[in-house]
Image 1 (cartoon, one colour):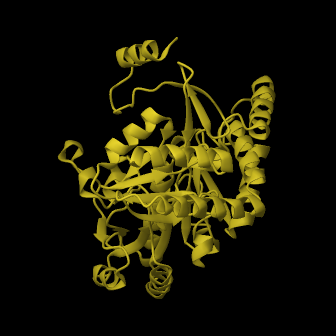
Image 2 (cartoon, one colour):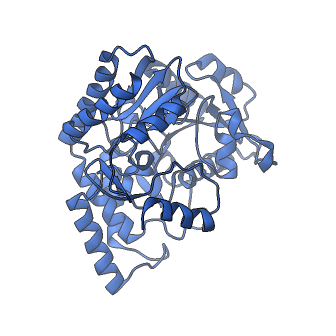
Length: 399
């Protein structure tokens, strides 16, 4: 089928909940995508940070094919009422490399953040014996998911439309970087946790100041308020370390992950240290497909690929993209920011949405963030040649 035929088929049968661009991708190689008409695109989006190893990665594909073949012939799924080896191995690798105690596996980022919310409220109730201490503090400009709870946890008013009222309640928002605002919001003794993104992705790719995060951790420790870190987008090597919190020198009381963990298969979860290791017990939290052996096998390959050397390259590639964009001296570029291969290019005097549409037309896949920012989340394995091609497209469009 050509692109138009795919558009027609989808538009006739798929619920119109997305404002899709008129492109139908059919295959990829490395960080290059191809549409149904054979046109090539450099990918600076990786499925919104999901395709961490790019496309047609031989090692990842072999692992998935092997896992699918073996599991389908033997046992494709058994639920979490029983044990499977890939899930246990993945938990071991994640906890060892993160310094955490236990892992819980889910299917998506929003579901993972729901787990953090439940964990925080149960910890507070069991410790203090009151449901009054249930409020979770989040930051303005944050994004935590699309479920009814994580929508309200998101600190952006545009996501709080009246269409979905009533929300669950129990969230407050404070300005990023303002510790005094955190202290003031916690002064009534009702706050049980603070949930943050170390780099605010959907909100514009804003890294939090390291001194603020360090002071926030110290305050949370003093007040026995759990510090929860949403690493759905920043985790699994995206910022140049396996988790962004490792660059900030903190130990979260729980950290969520998803997107890039299985290289393109649906998987998420969260990790907990000793302090909160036994808060959620049998029957408290569950998910049918979490830790699926096929997804776990794919995730093991992702972790094996993300060596220290590869993560160091992620940092170098990110710096290359930022410095190259600034060197274009475009009057439309106001700033380049971010960590690793999570990059935000702030634009001025031009619509970021119009630029993304023009980039796609010209052969570069990019994302928007916030009200004025281009967001780049290329595969962590993108080559220098693909980066150069993508930057040439960007330069041409900005001209």
